[in-house]
Image 1 (cartoon, rainbow, N blue to C red):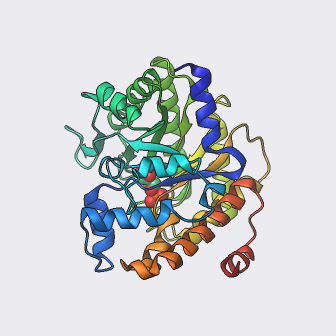
Image 2: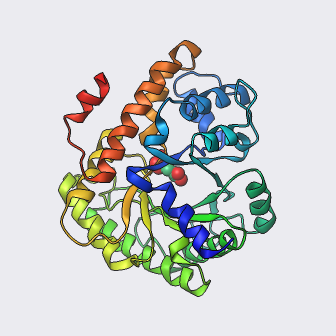
Length: 343
Ligand code: 13P
């Protein structure tokens, strides 16, 4: 696959106000989310849950790509169609999570490094055979006293860059996800400082590994105060600090930045994205979303594990995706919450 083809795929995923649905929770993580609502977690209930999102009528207007997990990419819909084909038929690009998770970093208590490079080339080739056209690898950085260490930042940046180069070699667009966690009591200023340092390390590593920036997507955190910080920044402060940090550390050749929601409330995740797109200043990249929880939470609550609630769950998902899409286009207004809900 040529670099141009990768760039075309990357741009198509975020065309015209579209974003990404992150539906790549591991069976273990999804089991925890379902258990919190006393919904039984089996391969079958997990499939039914995912199918609700993938078959939401009209959703391809707002969702250009879906990140799947290994279990899901092997599953078929209730009518026997592979889920990955179901998405492709709707014009939604299927993607796949390929990291093996964040494990304790030896020599640095409390920090983690993402694993999964061994055998990755072959796994990417087989996922591409199955229909995946992009991939995701998530690194996590914790802010704390003396953290993150340079060792942790550099090890994770190196992993992301090696993964991204392998993806492009195998014809998949890499989503590069360095997530500075919102766990903790740090201020928004500290989040800005750490996020900038991490992004700088990631782009240095991508350059070293010859990754084509036009053929990738960046999935960062927003610059936001820690969830236990006494002073939570306003929506405008988050928007300004996020844009300032990105403009300092992300080259304009990257076609789009698709934010993670990272545990933010769904409404706040929408408002932040809307404000980021409305605040003044140069924006050489598209600024869109690749939300997991913020796109799924309302639908999960409404669905509650019952097949008769699927249409209501789909309605909730459609509404949230419509608002997030408006936020990506810079046209989100709070009033849309009631307008879209009654549409
Ligand atoms: P959240 O939006 O729930 O953070 O999930 C996005 C994601 O893909 C994390 O890796």
